[in-house]
Length: 162
Image (tube, rainbow, N blue to C red; front, side, top):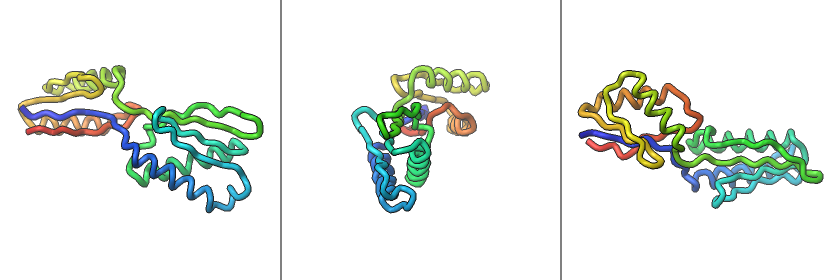
């Protein structure tokens, strides 16, 4: 029986490249000369720390990071942006990276599939949703449906079995 999995996975090496490219751009940009702007990836915590002397510069850092993520084909929806905090003369902002499909999002996906009246089997299996049916066309209809909706995190379709 044909099936596929719906997942939301991070490619940490691509995120690390985007952070490094943003760091290099900080060093070359004229508006960051002489300022102590920095960006740091904390892989274990799935966090990115932005630091600059003003909130405007932190916003610029975040915009540069988003541009580099998009160039690396990573959806900016993986970022959960926290509020800025003042720390002495510096402004800090933490960005948490969403990894995996949480139970609430998985339930929303299954509910949407059932509400559309598609005759497929959708089951939550840990941090993924497995969709199966006798016809490949039904599975492709589910993929098209999910691409049209936004769940606040990027979705990937993998493990397609015939």
